[in-house]
Image 1: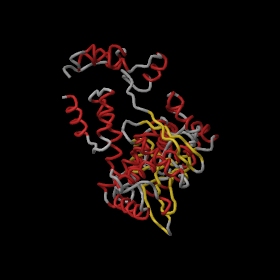
Image 2: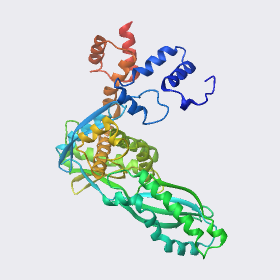
Image 3: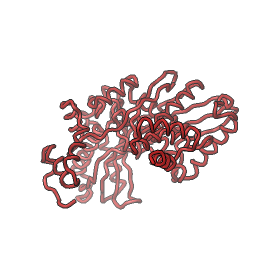
Image 4: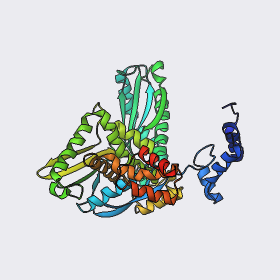
Length: 438
């Protein structure tokens, strides 16, 4: 970058593109063509996308695929997935089909509590603050009635508010720790609006509280914000069958397979280096559905990984056991999702994804997302404990390599034939392409 730019956000879209192209590319016209190539031909639809974020110059495409045959709580579902990684959708679909003949997935929402906090500093007597809080606690509910009115009609609202003393960790630091039920919305705006009103009420009531000294009346609110860590917004997903029923064309000794599978999970439970990769595989499935349904995958990721560390060490999200001849594989994870609000009513493909899923409630979406993560994890562990992860992955990844080297249809046929009997790796494919062309 040669020059700073002033007022970039105030430039027109065309001027933003022109500046980017001329500042960063040796061939500005080619850059502009590439950028505009991804614009939607429908101007109204393009404007909708432009307004999702700021300083928009184009659209960044990710493929949207479908993993069919998910039997969940007795009903079949086709799961829309948005992801760029090869083999993820195929693995999910393969697991779904495998378990559809073994009873399918069971999923249950165990709780759906969301959390928000007002972080504040108070210099004074802690016991006096506790008495003050108990006295004014009803005021937090009454002062937010205009905010909570519609949510309460849907069965949601503020569940509880606690005063938490955190002064042993940070001098003068306290919290209002509030819990919420937000029904089918993820609820971020609702929660944050409530919290900001709590902060206002806290300061106003403290100023008028006669038992406080002048210093104690001067409560300093640092921030009011929801938490993406939702350890009481939990969904459980599981599969189970008799060990003998695990038999498949690649599983000729089901007991040996089940024992090795359980060992692989136990390793991820106690070894953080393995657990991170193990859980990443789970998130391949979860993030793909969260993205497809217009939810916030960054919030989901942060909350789930915090949950994986809840016992003081990062550990596997999933668990497995063999008991009385029954193999069980399960997972309990926090998922704060919504099916109304945000992009769910704006993005055309998000609306389609929710239609494909049968217009689920937030609880139903939690279940479908969780079972997709579990299916992904089962597929990865099955590969790791049998053929190895690369065999299936490289078969799917080979198309990316061929596209990178702009292989022709005839070359693709020759490559496919060659690697039917040879090990696939990136270097092997590249070497074969180069030899073939020479």
